[in-house]
Length: 225
Image (tube, rainbow, N blue to C red):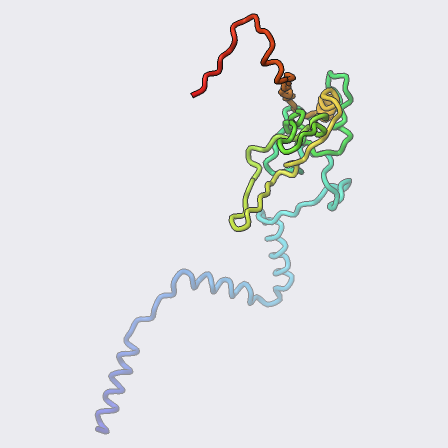
């Protein structure tokens, strides 16, 4: 056993030393070059120059600067369209700027209201008498309300039944004494409007004694079953 161990160890040593040396891949050359560049003696100034050169030649980093007359915290007052009421508000056909051919004063220019309100359509009508009341007090004035949006994000809570919408003008109305006042207000604000005339009911006085009056025409017979 003592002679077998040196012989076996000698064979293993010869087998280990008989393998050819492995060739370094191409990537190891890059690593050696990089390490040699970093390990150059006295390369602090060279390193700063190289960093400066890469920053100058970089095209991926850009720095934006705001113009001097505008502050970063101020809004852009020169914007033409303002979607302040809803994200689905339509764009007006024509924005009022005071050069309209009409004689009315363009109040929308100085009112401060969002510009997208000029694209909203309003309805001018006179409310009908309520069915549960006999008085006609609420049907004397003319009312203006805004038409609904096609995509106003109306939603209803499935549990409690609460209803809401993304339109801030939903359910908003204005009252006027006459129809002409409502039309004039819509023209000043630049609204697209249409007038819905009320249905007048003709009330004929009736009396039971009229059944016994003389009728020159043939009498109307109401046959019963």
